[in-house]
Image (cartoon, rainbow, N blue to C red; front, side):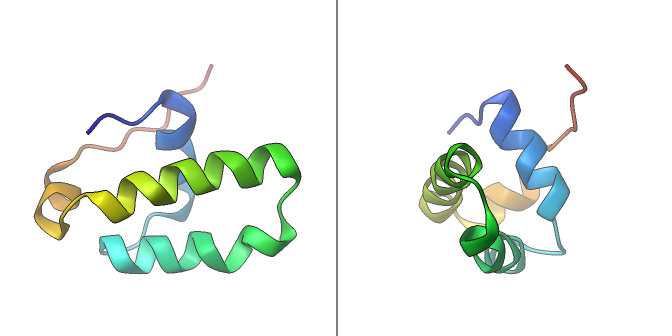
Length: 66
């Protein structure tokens, strides 16, 4: 599964020690996000939900300054 640059950057901002903690931090902020950011976060969460913990650990998330 591939993440967009925007999704990767968002994941980097919320990255914790494992996939479930990263997802929990991201979900916790959903109510405070503007509509565009909320949609991006939901996309990233859907992809994170679809991968395994092992795939998350193997994934190299890099923050990209555009």
